[in-house]
Length: 351
Image 1: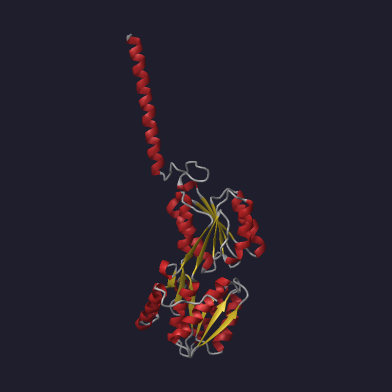
Image 2 (image 1 turned 90 degrees about the horizontal axis):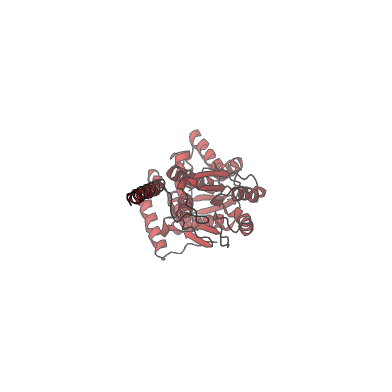
């Protein structure tokens, strides 16, 4: 009888040790950011196990605006969670589909397409890989495994148009678009509407570069526009817009009439300086990319959805550094217009 009791006691102690070990492992998993719910098939996964891929449009990852904002968001996500991030740069439209497929085939948890031009490629890759999660900025792709994010660029552009209309000394301002698309059209018409709202006598010249990756073209177009008396240019043209800044900096350094550039997508005064950047139309691509990517980690990602971010969502706006070159009086008027757009008193055109 004593032998049986001793044996039972030994087994009980062994079982207790096993339970304690399981408890320690669960605590360790929680400390490492692992979840019981898991993602992608219900398996437990630490945040550091997640992989996020990003395919740029032809503007490139170092365009100082659109693609760069998205990549910086993924880099911040990597630093915060330990997830793996990678981008593939597209040199032409033909690169979109194979670049997207590379991430999908390598088992990435989410693959981003950055830009309107990737819409068709995202649609095709999504339909051929039903178990893959994809997301796109600036286009709506109707597929159950794709999250689409668009912005009300017309609203933010209206505000920098107000700044331009009240700042210009020549009553001549200009807009340079990259390639014609519904997205860039929203930038264009919003900007023109803002200028006209506060300065109906101002002339707004519209031109398109036909490319997002041609700084030399942007510089040449800017030279022509400045020579024609335009003293403020708003480029929405990716890396092509960098050439506009280069031309403006050269002119201001040489002396003569002061010229300005309005930044796009991010605060471009950080890159080009407040001596040439009047203000910037902020488009929170970074916040959108980070938010949707975190949803994958949290297990709350939903494909087949479209999110539109405007002024009321803080998805677009003007840079905080605008106060360096824009007067308090003008900024007060910008704030007033912002409130009217948010409450629906003013509807900014989209085309």
